[in-house]
Length: 329
Image (cartoon, rainbow, N blue to C red; front, side):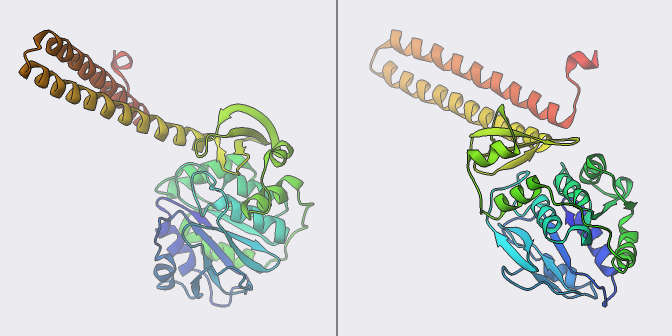
């Protein structure tokens, strides 16, 4: 199961409805910060024991394994694998690596669940699950506080079940007891991307096997990006391994743009202040002509800073979808 913004309540609802004799293991990736109390929170409502994932642990039915901060949660050969692989969709742990590794390991026995969240982590992983014969479940967008992740998963592939969070637990309990379908041949690309997340592969020759070179650069490391052909999803990956959907790329570029503008505005404000300070010193030394020139420069730097401040406001409004003055006319 994968969740992000607004997904905690949905996770609690799903786990609260699962029986203690569930014939399956549950793996949870929630976009978290440097510290997480998710396992303790979920333990309060779950009949199944909830624990933080430990690398190398044997997977057992009737257990809930929660991803820990700073590492991807993967599954391999009936064991958990925690790896500090490259971030995907600006997150680590990310949902896509878990889903891909489960699909590559268990094929049709996998049920993927995408809950509330922003952007579209989980969409590529859900597509991988379907490509390997697994089952796809999505929280109904109208039931999700942040519907972007469920909507992206719905666009990525044919989803088997769309339901409110309160109905997903009973649904999983039923489907888990049904015979699994036929596992389809595991695509090479899924195995390859799983290996990258596990830090087993890296390099430009690997990326050439996944896609074609693009004109864009990685927002994380500024290296070259390869464009990956993944059905309806437009995705990118760099030779270090950072992976992005087009939407997460836009989000990263927006953050970079804002950081650059703030840096430029601060630099111009500091130049104006320093120039004025020098101007005062020059005037005190009776070098009035040079002091006047410096004062004029300071005014120019202030004007530059105000222009950048205006660009920042326009950038902020554009990200929020606020119409500009021309649109309002």
